[in-house]
Length: 314
Image (cartoon, rainbow, N blue to C red; front, top):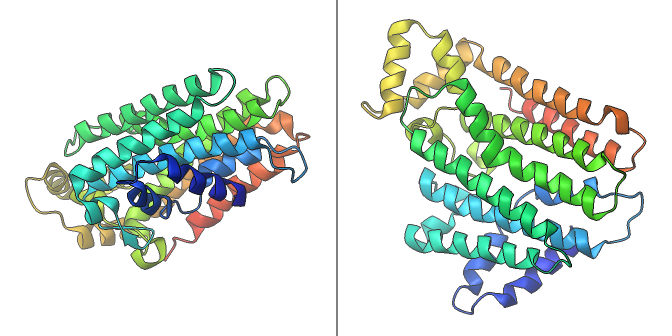
């Protein structure tokens, strides 16, 4: 991670002087760096020798992730990210859109520095899929006709895809045995779905001061996520119809009321079960690869997410 930070700091010099500090500001909001961690752990060989290819690949996926965060905060009209003002809040939405584009572009520029086109092809395809997921979710905002299948598809694209390609790159670039890159790719996809469901749960059950970003934006923006799906299923028809009006923007949202209903109707437990189901599938993807040095570390990361979900219980 230290090598990654140094590499990304060095890459700031490649940005035009006029936007260099803006890019630096975005790097400062990078948080836990889960996706780079997946690159490193999937390529782990049992020693602490720093592989420059893994560092470069990790920087690519981190820049792509940061670009999506900049764009997400614009669409969610969020004020905070990592306990700091979002780029949209600080620089304005118009400049932030272009800043996100610049981060995307530089990520792909770094990807071209590998000796073959494999990495560039993998990350450019994944970037397109991530953007497709965000586009579909944006078009479905305020729609009460979104079903669980569409929701699953959206999060598989917008979140799980970058988790998947992070795992693939780590295993592929480190020369792992045949089949392992496919196995960790499946692990990453399921972990990414689980993480996004967890993140959707955070929007209703997290604490803003602890999480460090603006919460409660999903209902206000008409974004139907799993907690809302479960609540709609468990509310009496009259209440569910009223909630649909809030999702559609016909009436003001009542976040406090919906939070209390979620607590009373056991929404948290139902969503927690969905997270754990994805984590079980993630672990199963690696069941035949326990002897690989990377596997215990990846499984530990899935266990950490279980702990994070449990930490949201009030």
